Image 1 (spheres, rainbow, N blue to C red):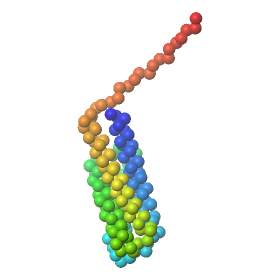
Image 2: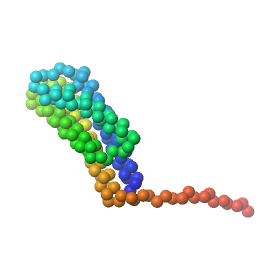
Image 3: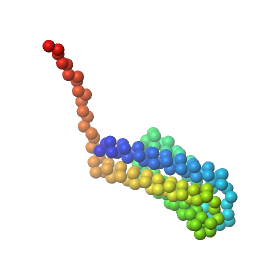
Amino acid sequence: MARVLVALKEAGFWVRGSALLANLLILVLWMVHYELPVVSHVQLAIFYLAFPGYTLVLTVMSISALLEPPGELGVRLFSLTGACLFTVAGFVGLLNYIFLNIFHTPSLLISLLCLLVSALLTTDVLILECGRTLERIAPDTELPEIPPSEPEVVEDI
């Protein structure tokens, strides 16, 4: 059970790190592709106001996960808030792309990356909840330590 919990915590860290990298990629693509039509005010507000602060907090959270494994309510709320934010940004971008056909390919890529980040953050919450449930089911289950075996001495006859 202890190995499963450690594996879940490591998986959560990698998922959070992947979300951070995808978020940074979104920011870079968005800065490179700054031609914004009037229609995209909602997406503009989400990207320019929410993402920089969110990226900073996500970076701090990823670094702090190295020091202390996450598991607090704040981390769950943060990931859920991020998942909602990226879902809205992704769907606004996709709807604009599909129905209005205003955006170019980088914006479609940005929208798909937003949905990817949303999925990663939702997965992070699920991993945290799985670990929490396992800790409740078997809180003090430790793997038995196997004492080191002494080498057998074989005498030559």
